[in-house]
Length: 408
Image (tube, rainbow, N blue to C red; front, side, top):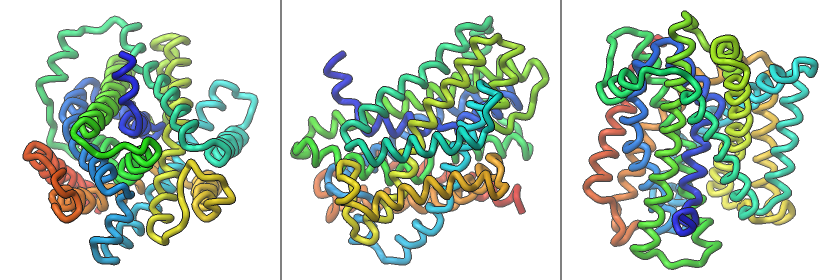
């Protein structure tokens, strides 16, 4: 067990950060609106997430560089700048939605204190931690925060469920050809396979290798696979159990609309008890503290790698001022979304649109890099990775087309 835990690092953090407060809101809505009908999506998305994140991790290990640097070196500038153009607003909106969600949950637990005070306090704490602590300490903090996600796995076992029906809904896909069902499938795909995670995974693997000073070999790549697969499995387990909880409690009670994570927690309290409500709310805070540094960090790494700034969470503020200033700006802009009247659900909608546009393009580029011997040498993609990557591209493209169709 000790040997297994030592292998866990960037992959575990990436997977856990995928279950941020905005993701939890999406999973809760899926359960409330359709019961257990979307449970099968957790099974389907696992191998797809693992394949894409595995490619990104391998690129980081083999090149020793972030995805943005690889794009800058080997592809035309319009490709790189297009990715930045769509990624930055999406990441900023995602940060804003998560900060608002965490603030709303804190206000729900302590109603005497306004939401905006919690939002400002959370932002200030995150700024201090990111700037003050080096990479190794931050990664340890993030690893421990992953434990908060276990709270969601506990909740369904506190309820009386028909596990036979749960198994049928999990392994026998249900599909409905209507706008609402297709919309939630699109939202679940966009939430689980997010472009910012591609950049974060690649950069963190490169940094982690640099810190450890290990040569890329078969053992290192196998350890990376264990780390990534564990992280993605963990992420999908949490997705599964949140849909199971809300689908088993809120759907039978006739509660069909969940707009924010605090609404989900409030709705659970009278139906599943005070303890379930507190566990759900506490999990939101843990996942937000885990996800927001990943969001802000990935955006700052993208900027730094594009313009050649000194970057790294292991550097002091004086050594990488532009990098840390971009982290601060992204957090402040995300915080300001509440003040300009953009609701969390609006932010999530805009984020989903931007992710939906960029994800298929990024997947094609990652597939191309992963099969480019000039870049990857003898560590190119396996046949299975390519097959799963192409399936992911087809699904994400279909999701993007469906999203645009529904909206316009």
